Image (cartoon, rainbow, N blue to C red; front, side, top):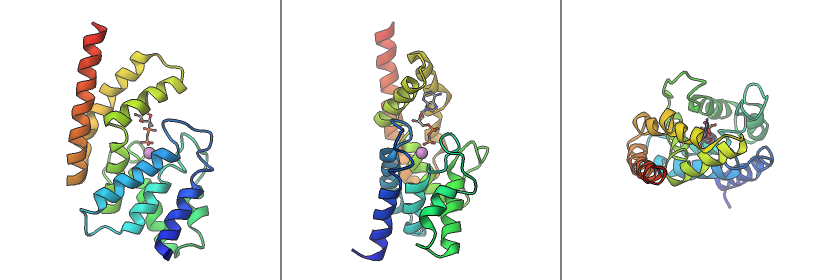
Length: 191
Ligand code: ADP
Ligand code: NI
């Protein structure tokens, strides 16, 4: 195993602990899917640094303010410290911080690595997996089904037009079509 593989491997193990009490929305599996989506997109973005993409994807939610009360990407930095040079750690943290839509008031990330990880995170919010996560989130928060259905209109159906990369747009179009098909069928069944 080379040095590059081993840090990714270690990051995969590291994220299990912070997410251990979470299910559905934010958990280790979500981070692993975002990582896989991000690597797929990065394959078509030759100017991106794949170590930054991989680690930012795996660590993108470990300091999410909805779950953790950390400052300055503390959970990500605890892992990265002593494993990488300071400037590489800062690049990974700025990539993570550029991903959140609300934190950046809708502004797209400047770096290609940020654009890739943001697309990868958004892909996991749509398609079949996005539907599953939405109802899991609603259940976790004790919300009625109609609230989760409303979330499709408030957020999920808007994501395909917010994608940054060409690969992200292609993948999002397929998943978006599936959301629409699901809503059509749901509408038929409910009426
Ligand atoms: P991330 O931080 O990974 O981008 P979010 O925190 O926005 O994701 O949401 C996690 C999951 O929960 C997503 O699949 C999202 O669609 C779902 N979700 C978030 N808010 C709501 C809501 N109000 N109703 C239903 N599902 C929601
Ligand atoms: Ni996420």
